Length: 239
Image 1: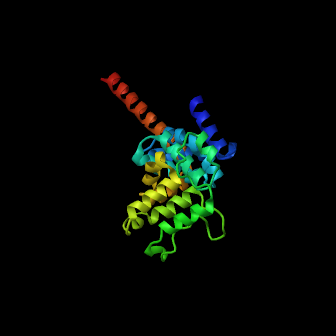
Image 2: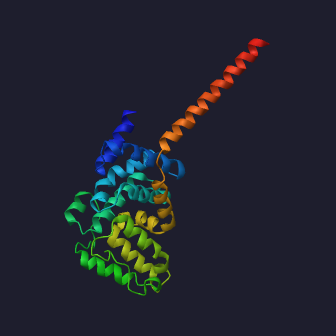
Image 3: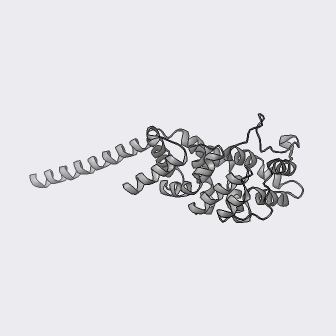
């Protein structure tokens, strides 16, 4: 349909994809829509709000679909999930506060200085599994972790942070800094499910041919039904 093709065009523009990638976009949406409790339309409507911010922060299409799917698994509101992912993508890059305000997001206590944000996150994520060094916003080469890498890495130690002394307060403080009050529940829902995040991302990697297979299955079932009807008619005619 033209509405569906408009959606795909917007997805592709958001992630700088060209005509060669349309099959990949359709396959990923179709596959995840079949495997996870979210429809391809819901993924698309969420990404409409978040795609450009996610891409600017370094996340690719498949990582963005995984984040969207996991965020929506608890919240069940694709538009809110899209807005939440946009916000966290902007915040972890120290985006100008005016950009957040113009997007209608909460900026109370916002830390625009990324080295300050990095120190704060490190201090509140010191756990046994990272030898009490804390979780870093940056990679070893000094570049930023993209939103998928950041939320997956933080998610893997999230329950460990919660079980430390004053862990609830640490979690609340981190959420407020990376998501703002209005989007904290969306980001928390992703941080609580790192295994699901990896699982859905792996599913996006194995989506090739998904839409084609589904069409063939539908055609096969239509042909089977037609054949059954034909045989029924022939039998009736012979009686």
